[in-house]
Amino acid sequence: MASPLKRRNAMSFLINNFDQVAQLFLQHLGLTLVVIVSSLIIGIPLGILLARIKWLRGPVLSILGVIYTIPSLSFFVLLIPVFGLGTTPAIIALTAYAQLLLVRNWLIGLTTIEPAILEAALGMGMNGWQRFWQVEFPLALPLLLAGVRLVALSSIGIGTIAAFINAGGLGVLLFQGVITANYEKILAGAISVTGLSFSVNYLIRMMEQRAEFMIRGED
Image (cartoon, rainbow, N blue to C red; front, side, top):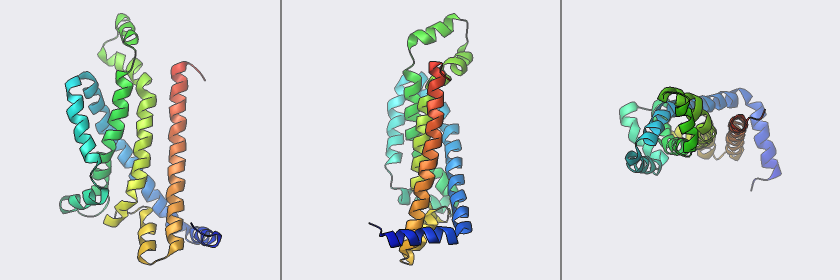
């Protein structure tokens, strides 16, 4: 456990090296946002497809589950010969990891909507596209956002390892601290990653709650 002196030294490091830490913080946040967007671009259509075609669910979710079990450092290294060092292999790997978390939640959200609600939308004359946007999407949105929150937290955590392949981010502080045996730098990196995780978790959780309130017709 870190002593009070080491914690004070870590805070002093954060203050004295604010520009460097802020730059790494923004890199980490940027990487996470790109992964979230790319995951949604792939995951939303895939979830809709699985919701419509039941027999695909088992095979696709099994494949995504296998991908999720690949050790992150090994995954990064496997991508280096094709994509080189930097953020590209990190984004590809993190997006691949994200699919299980996102698609599973999105699929549950789409498939647990009451059939009576869908029948009512059909009875109102809505076509498939209108039913999706006006009924299915709003009702499944809280679970989709829950999946996004899991993706964000997973990407922040695994993204620290991406510093090993020159993807930048707060993992740089952790790796530099380990290499130089600088405990204050390690603790400063850990505090920064934790702060980013808590902040992102809070913001997306607030969005989830807002979506839930909208479904219940509350302000």
